[in-house]
Length: 613
Image (cartoon, rainbow, N blue to C red; front, side, top):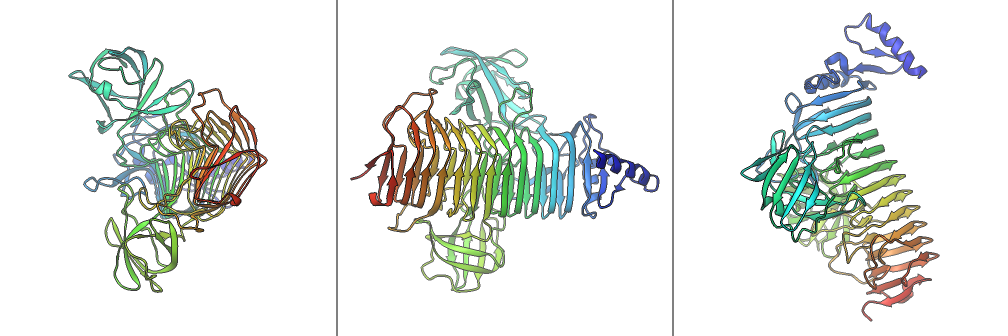
């Protein structure tokens, strides 16, 4: 407090001699957004004024931009715009990729943006912020929300087989035309509705659909009160259920951190994000501390993110997620991965052409001069050598051409993909809370050290943690080699993915198994607490060195036991240790294994069963 008072006194004195209210302490330039026309709680468009304040800071490394307390509204009009191709968030070549950006920082160095719990409200479809080629950026004490979230929400008040009454959330704008319900927002309307049902009592989320309403006849009884007649006999809906729906087309993201170094987000709240959440791609050293993705308190909304919350693609250095909280996402809270590009053509002994394969990931440079790449056979996910990039060219949105410093391995052909192993991060996810998502909690595939510690996973619809790696579907790379999962709480996870409802899944998509060769290595799951409604705990495939020890497993009364399934299900693994676990469950724990020898398992307290004797 004394430091802040001193800075305030210095700023007053300096303003007597300076045309702006920019002030200096010993080593900090302080810039106030209000001096550039940003007026909180005015409900006017502050896009131009806020961008002026940012540009004023650009040539002042070490500056601090102070945002006022209160609400700041930003519209696409007068906002900064850039054409952006975003990993896992780019679709449909026929539509523009130009994005409107609330806070654009491009080429900035050492800027601290600090709010006093400032609320920035976005209008239309906008990125809340974009950091492009920046160094040393900190954003702190800011909340972001949408005037009209692109998610629509309603609650079932009454339902029979032939009719239903709904309470529409006041933030979900609609029109009833010709007995049909139309969702709309600021510059958009939604026709394709991806629908997820939420039980507000348990927070459990399940896939559903909106066809019964779309095919029925809608009548407005009063503002935000709808009556629908139609066929509801097969919906499974009940009074009190909450329906959440969106157009699944990904045409934006909540925020973007691209080609930036040493980025810190602290005490940030994302009350709604359109598109793929906060995406970090080809960036180095990222720290998210006390970042909250959840609807604003008192809003009565359920969903805070259209898809993922924190998405990291092709990053390096360190990623630290500490004391974060996510609640209400239509996809994964955290996803960390690289991208496999498929070999299209070997032009000569040193030059190769590669292709982006997934329809939502393309259009950006995935390799750079000096990077080390692995030549990976798609079917096995095993590396057949390394190469160093001498020249990398993005030929168009879908193809890159790479010239290597040494000859490409002779066996490399169109059955191979390339992984950029220079852009693989160390990952620490700790002291955080993940709830209310119908998909996974954490996805992580990186060759560097991974630590997942002291977190709480509550009723994730699918696996709480998934370690995948594939070169045939999402093309998300790569193998893991050092993963520690310890001191976490897993509560009633996996209900949405039976029969493959393991809490932790190690599931590389290698369609061909090679004897004595493994995709993943050195995964330790220790000292965790599992509250489970069913038997499956861990499923693992093609993993060398798996340790599941000193964990406590208790049974939940949430859902009935389904049948005789294995607690651990292993396929083609080796050097497995399962010791000192405490099972407090009404079923016999089973360890089932396939395509591996019993002698590679050290186990106590579980019944060992060969899947295919």
